[in-house]
Amino acid sequence: MQSTVPSNPEATIILTIDIGTSSLRVLAFDSAAQRLRDIEGRRPVAVHSDASGAAEVDAARIVVDVAACIDDVIAQLGARAHDIIAVGIAAMATTMVGIDADGHPVGPMRTYADTRSDAAAQFLRRAHAEGDVHRRTGCMIRPNYWPARFRWLQTEHPDEWHRATRWVSIGAYLAHALTGSAHITHSDASWTGLFDRETLQWDGLWLEQFGVSAGNLAVLRDVDSPLDSLVPHWAQRWPMLAGVPWYGAIGDGAAANVGSGCVDEQFLALTVGTTGALRIALPGTPIPPAGLWCYRIDRQTALVGGATSEGGNVYQWVRDTLRFEGDDVAIQIRLAAYAPDAHGLTILPLFAGERSPGWAGDAKATIHGLHLGTSPFDILRASLESIALRFGQIATVLPTTGRVIASGGALEHSSVWMQICADVLGRPVYASGVDEATARGVALLALRSTGVITSLGSLPTTATAVYQPDGAAHETYRRAAVRQAALYKKLIGEPLA
Image (tube, rainbow, N blue to C red; front, side):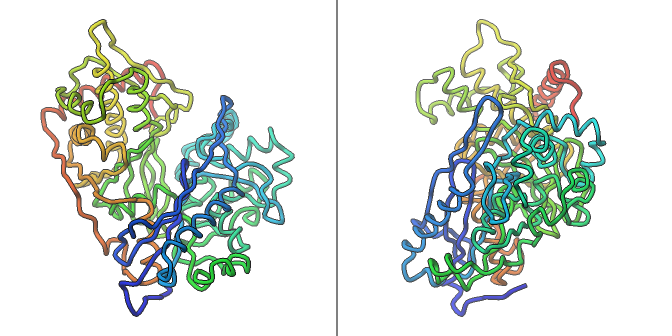
């Protein structure tokens, strides 16, 4: 492990690059993993989506915007820019783009939300035992992952397939643009569905299936191993960054876990922003439960859990569609007045299809039990409870922990939803109190890699609030979960988990 501990630890600055689905940002953190206020570079990320299921971004534009954000932050830091000792990266996971021999994209960068390879995924599921693939890679055979996209490109876009000499994620593409070499971390690679979680190498069976070699993919390098040196163009642009280590991108979900303090099996991380996820960090190579995935934080630590397509997007849809009057504070007061499951509704909140745990990508939302007395607030409260019940379903197959650490804007702004989650899970839910969990996770990994801290748990977080479960409410929600599961089985089928 490289050590670059400065003579004055207070002067330590970690630069973090966070490439998300709506924006990319460059931030700065100190040696205590505290964000430096008023230091930020930000640019929007434009995702092209259409009715065919496309979800694409311009990879070359991402590099231009990352560079512009770094310029902004260096200017804001002034003389303190020379205190930067490392640069770390988090990126939206399961992205994919082909590049030619000169490193230029041969097509668009496709994100995790691109579902046009669904028919290809169905074909591969008929040809391969999905359970075996799941145990080997930690991923299902679904349109979210690379195997289905490879099949789709080979059959639907052969020109693009043959023009590409290498297939990379957005993190590996950025590494190539900066250093001339395409490197990918174990974390980023584990989101592709092409990564063998036992050997920590590209999965030979999938490579053989598609007629590609490891040379057609990014070179694997763990998160504590710096990328190659910046190419002259970037080294001249940022001389203060040319001599510091740049670390490869990790999956944004892994970074969020680390940043919220959920770095081992003691903590379950609940994140609800636009969508949601429930994850736990476990040592080694645990077997993923049915319907859930197993990614990686680094070569020592796995990340097991499930992501949902529903979260704050459902709250916003209900509020906008039913045209609620009043601000969020007034709405929260009304929602808090409800007793658990008092609305008489059963909801499958699958407005954007289903990921974990059933992976029914074409599933639709259903509201059952409507009557003439049903109010808009009934539907909103029931929607929040229905999403919490989905997290409860994922939690039943994850290890039991003493603490659930909650983060994400949708939860952080709703104490009502926090309490619902605590009552559904039957465990205390702690508000993480962490500002920018994903970027903070990147900073912690860089601080560990440079030797400033000895472990990811060296700088624990402090919860801002705790929500204790109510026993009677928990039993009420258990009955509600049975109703929701019965509705799922009737309309969609047997769940995977």
